[in-house]
Image (cartoon, rainbow, N blue to C red; front, side, top):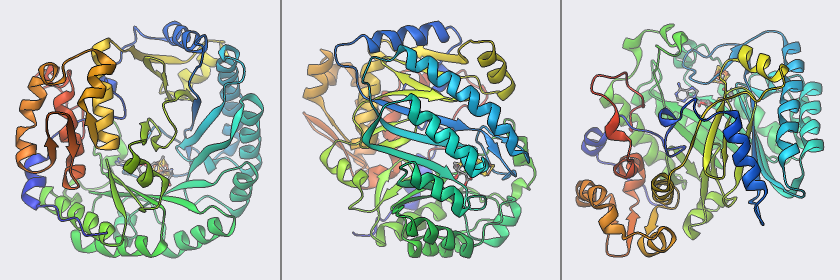
Length: 462
Ligand SMILES: C[S@@+](CC[C@H](N)C(=O)[O-])C[C@H]1O[C@@H](n2cnc3c(N)ncnc32)[C@H](O)[C@@H]1O
Ligand code: SF4
């Protein structure tokens, strides 16, 4: 695989605030007018279809033992694992509400357990949780099941529980191996600990190991991040997520625990990103787009080549269009033509579920225009190609006329060789993958609506 060279000037020019498009319409468009009755109606409608799509499940475990100061996730710090038992009982209750509405025989083809840190739970608690879900849902024999694990708190007993419950993939937080950075963000996780943990995973047959890194953390420099990337390459993970640090101290006050002046500035950050993309692609990883790298023989890379890759809230997947049921505090569902999110506060979640009510907080039912734009954005982001005649046939539109404005906005990226546009298709180039959010934004009908001077809603695209 050849090294991908990303011009520094271009990264600066295309760096702007923009959505990550884990959904379209994006979360700021969702409202409280769409709540539990609306979600239930959509679940009933989809289960009454002659051939409902397969199911994906997401389960959120919000607890962590200690606070990483950069963290932007919805978490609760606790030293008491007993908290996990009542929470698991609430998850089961919610699961049963979904299950009661499900058509007989519907199979779960994908299940992801995220957090927080699911291995905050003791191995015996985790075992009860996993087997409880297995009893309540009908899992396909080849279901893709995965969990987010924090190597600092995941024991070999946890790994044994995962193996016994059919897990083959774990996704682990690393972020940065530099000791200064680790001290500054309150996450001491030496390289040796991570290496030994990965060996323990492999010894149990977990060959599909994903790692998370963040660029833009305090005290990171272009020089300091190079050895981190070299160590990651030597650890040989199947997939790498390289997240752009989202600094949102007004929402996550712990991000004030370090000095803002230590956060690398635009130029240094862009250099870290360019270096890292070049190091990973030179080592043979494929840049899938949207923060993700995978080995060329990984099923994500193969699916992207065949244009059969998909993406939902849990990330990239090879599982074809599924309905996603999100269970637990803050979880997101994507069912039929809607998105819905559970309440984000644990106290409100607990109260609502104990009262026998669905904890749905907000959502949206897609219009025909939303569905069309969602499809185009998804084709671009995931498979890097939009086939105009197929979209025209599926939606009864004339592509160039309908999207005249978007095509006009794409002229500059086309001149920069980020995208190739002809009469029948739009194709994202190798370099265009780095700027994929910028290429999707012209198709977003809501972006222009934000009032001038309003609080920023999105992180930077670069
Ligand atoms: C739920 S955590 C991962 C699992 C586990 N809790 C851990 O930390 O090892 C998911 C990932 O989100 C990423 N993340 C957390 N806060 C972030 C932020 N402010 N900006 C960008 N990425 C962030 C980190 O890479 C983290 O590994
Ligand atoms: S990064 Fe992971 S372990 Fe750290 S606070 Fe966030 S969810 Fe918890």
